[in-house]
Structure formats: C-alpha cells, structure tokens
Amino acid sequence: GILDQGTLKWLLLPEYEDLRFAHFFDNPDYENSLLKTSVTDKFLFNPRYSIDHKQVGFEIKKDGKWGVYQYKKGIIIEPVYEEIDVLSSVSSIKIKLVGKWGVVDPAGKTILNAEFDEITLQDNIIYKTTQAGLTKYFTLEGKATEPK
Image (cartoon, rainbow, N blue to C red; front, side, top):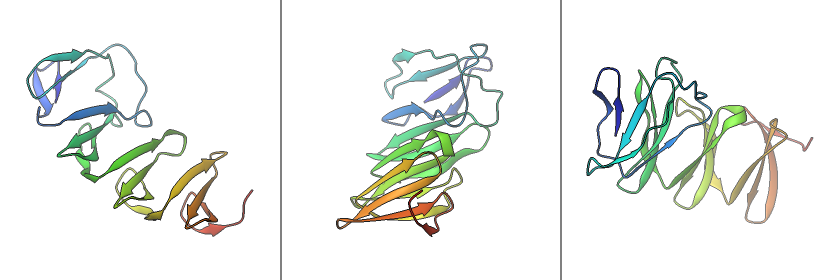
C-alpha cells in the first residue's frame, strides 16, 4: 500500500502484491514522502516522491494482474493485465492481455488492441509491431503508417 507520511492516511490500501513507481507520471522532488509497505505491513522503502503533483502514479499488482494508480484519482487502470510497461517518453502504457501486447493511454483508452506479439517504440514517434512474423507501424495515436 501507499501511506501519506504527512497525514498518515492510506492513499492505497496494503492489499497489493507489488507496486512500481510509474516514471512517466512524475519525477522525484525529494520534499514529500510516501511509504511503501507490504501486505504484512513491513517497511520496504521510503522513496521521497512528491505527492502534491497531480500526476504521481504507481503500477499496481493484485491477484497476479497489473494496473495503474494515480494520486488524487485512485485506480485509473484496473489491475487486469498480465504485464504493463510504461513508455515514459510518450505517456502511454504497453499492456499484455492473453499473451498479446497492445497500448493504452494513461486513462485506459485503447491506442492499439492487444493483438501483437511484440511492440516497440521507435524514436518516440512511431510504434513498430510484430504479429505472426509481419511488421507493421502505427502513429502514437494508433493509425497505420509507414516506417520513418
């Protein structure tokens, strides 16, 4: 879970298997603190990330599935994905569902359906996808395009 050290209130209850700082949401400013504790209430670490910034976020894992929590908004992407991978430079999230990759935005809106064997970001301007040995390219908005 995540505990606000200033108010000693739970921002996220300690019911998650794992939490990972979502780097595209915010940068540390080392002034305010959040505590991360396990479900057994053991102190794990004390990173000093700002909780004042509206974009602070964490990747959360519950029942073996991943989602996203955002400060002051709560869970913005329910933990339903096998894996997630934050694409920090373009504020999107690669998601894995039933063994296939797709892309969603921070609000959970689908950019690319989860139907690809692999997705990589090229030069922060285009997604390169592989499906059944075929390579296709898409804009950051999810429209088919040619390689740049």
